[in-house]
Image (cartoon, rainbow over all chains, first blue to last red; front, side):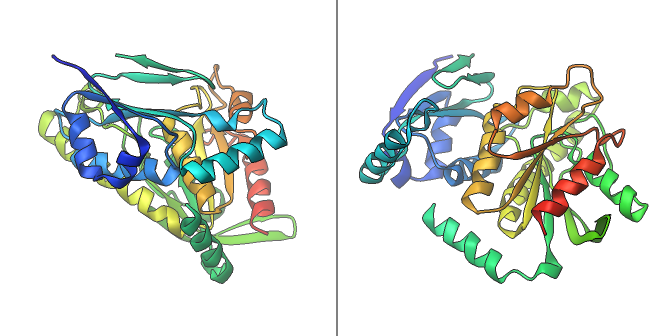
Length: 117
Length: 207
């Protein structure tokens, strides 16, 4: 089996078709997005995934970390981050999404995503 | 995101209190229907739905109307909405392990996927949600984060319920430290332990 890891800029994800996005994951592809997705985007991904579940494609594993929500930040740091994110139009962080038949688990720590394949 | 927040704020402003909907959300097999049954038995004397150890036992939304809970002089009436467990995958192997055959497993999986979609759609209609987590497992996972994030985006008040405290390795403190901004109550829905604290918390949140 050829496992692909694909980098996707957030801008491309947010403007693209969710149907095509999940179809690409079905083809044994792990996608890395350079942002923390919003809760609504995550819910939309789950809904779209559920529409495509079959015995060959049981679903996905997904996890993300948000770099701007670090506990050690003071109020000034948090305001600065919110300002930067408003300008760049995305939450700083990353999101990993892969097919569940390959990615069995993604363990999350505040600064790491551990992928079990 | 902003649009969802405004929509949530407006709907909460104009929502009629007599139609309060209390949702039960959470991942698969966290004990949502067991909790719904416990609440219905405590206050109405009848259960709401079937429970089992097989994942995705609840595959459609179940509503019990006009449930009234009381604590002293305070009381609250609501429609209790039990939802299917939210998941990012449906494991056919789990059904097979539980003795459910190929064709039935396929049907069950299809119903489970529809249940997950329905549960997410119903989020917009909730006035208060209990997010039921299994206190014996690590609460930091994407499903829990996504559920809480979506409720937060809609300005829906949340009570986190750490269920299964009757089990030896239950750890409600781990849930509290993982999601410190939420009011959290540890219970055993199966045995009815600490349900008084859960009812007090609900009355406080919906007063």
